[in-house]
Length: 249
Length: 147
Image (cartoon, rainbow over all chains, first blue to last red):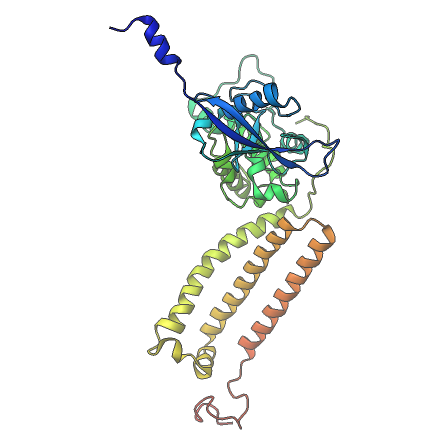
């Protein structure tokens, strides 16, 4: 028989280990070029990369700058490039990475770095705005607009987007110039294009038929791999392409 | 529908939108056609002849281009492959060049090269004369070029 105290002790034994984080740093006031800086931190088996960054900021170097809000994979603030892959720092457990090697943490690529891991998200948001990511309907209903479960399921996948920019900044076409709308904007257009309550599908399809629209997608699937919400981004883009070709949803 | 939202700060160019769609469709369509054309081309030239690749000589090519079928076949392959390839290069140029003048010049150079090759190729296929020089022997049996 085990007493309650013992079982608490067993649960409390979280292994801790030493890891090295190599963080891409850039101070716009003093640096011309970004540089790598390494930090050794002791972390627990339950810690995420975000916890390690907090440890650095709170205990080692308060000047380390990064975005995070909810810290639980919902707000999409802390997308960063960890060991060469775009992930949310708050959803990446350190024990799942190869801890015998240093962990490389960089800002997401393709957007201008403002400081350390913080990038200028404005081009990303501009592309999002350009696809009119809101319901457009001409009627004035007295009650809620009804929709069948099948109609709702049509765009269910793309409702999950949290605008973290992990997909768009993993896209090699977006890296080359910021003109391409990028996967996230197309995902959010998809969310309304295939919504039975929305009336402006043609408008959005016309916007995405642009020179910088869906046709720049090379189906490299980087976006699908990067999405922390598991959205099938490349599939959504392909569906929008099909809708543009047919000229309707 | 009376919904007007403010214009974005830097509106994206609406020029050439339909062209981008057409180019995308062309790449898929020509790609599929080219797969069959090239498999046919390789089979007829390399696999079906008795001595394989060694069977290809001037006479072999001359024999093929004496038939309108192979003239059309090779002409189609030439046009589709060159436009397909050049358009692929164009997308790469558009992806990787940052300066507008460089992008424009590279694209113009690409299409000039493609147009020249298409023109020369089409000229050869349609105006091919196996009897180039009656003084040079061993091109074709005498019975073909009597003139």
